[in-house]
Length: 162
Ligand SMILES: Cc1cc2nc3c(=O)[nH]c(=O)nc-3n(C[C@H](O)[C@H](O)[C@H](O)COP(=O)(O)O)c2cc1C
Image 1: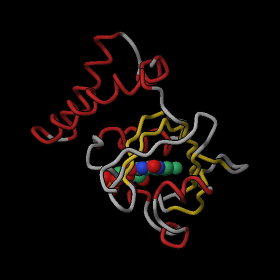
Image 2: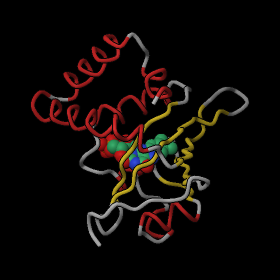
Image 3: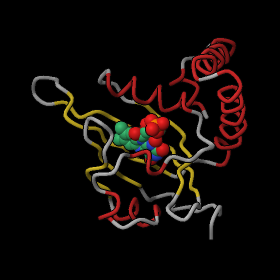
């Protein structure tokens, strides 16, 4: 049914890998099952095939700037399935480095987010998205930075405190 929330177990992980451009190269069974696509439909596609319109672009901007710099990032993400349902995840996205410290690919391991965290993330993302629609991504980034500054924490500290 379209626009219904899908969930998964506390002890389950949704895993995928991408190439340097964000094209999907691997998905575990749960990644494929919850997405509503077949493995064949997913492999080789850009990861934004799962992008939900409720997601503020600034989150992905941050994600890509971190992993391209060789760093990890934690992020709450709302994903859209093939039929238009959605599921929330708490993602840990990491770059893989070769023996010369060159990035070869990216990896995301997602767990079920807590309700407590989502109660904070949902209104935050809604206001970031509103800002994005009214004033663009750069203004949204400023808004997020200001919010973190007011709280006196970094993005990582904020996300990991939820
Ligand atoms: C390893 C990895 C996993 C990703 N997983 C997701 C995901 O589950 N959902 C999503 O919308 N974007 C994911 N992205 C980000 C997408 O590549 C993309 O930036 C995002 O969907 C926004 O689309 P856009 O950049 O075309 O606006 C992932 C990126 C990487 C590197």
